[in-house]
Length: 295
Image (cartoon, rainbow, N blue to C red; front, top):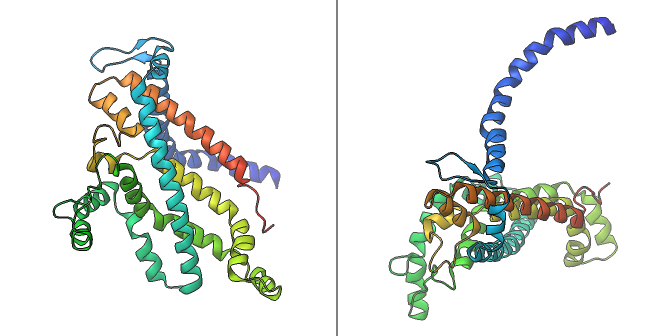
């Protein structure tokens, strides 16, 4: 029996490799090679027209003394904090409303629609809606308060971009939280009602603890997507005015494709990648995301 099984395994091995080969090829060409090439370029001086020149840690020393980089990092952190706090709160609120008030598949589909729209289209739509002269939001604000609001000025740019980002991603995260709510047994709530707990107490002491693994995943996905914000900023503000919305990815993009300093841009990308790994690891440990109170 064992001999026959080994023969079948040897016969199937070439077919298995043949089936896996396209995926492995795509992974190597479009992920592994660019990633390793980016790590190599971060230690070089590379301006496209000349071959990369190895300079060791010089790019990292420049990064440490680069005020624009630290300013862009600070702006990015502001954007991430606003996006995560607002995004997680609205996602949980929406998921709870879906769970308690309706089971309609149509409503769930409508809520997730913004996630299916590209970031460029979402940014264009919101830019038109918030236009200080013709935007429908400012038309209403003028009728109510007599003056428009310049949503993309120096003070409002980051909060406005955070709201657009939350609008785009909230439906997706709400569906994830909704799936977590569906996994909580109804007997848990029945026991809570027997003990006389109010809806608010059950939400605080039962729902939130039991949702911890899902919420940890939502927070981590939210942080990663917020750190990677680019398309919405590029379409609406291009990092302005006066660098008020110059998030880290915008600075990396400008260094690479405006100043053609690909070596330094690769250094910043590698640093951002390392920061995301650290933040994700800390978040996983603090939230104990691999443990569930349902077990």
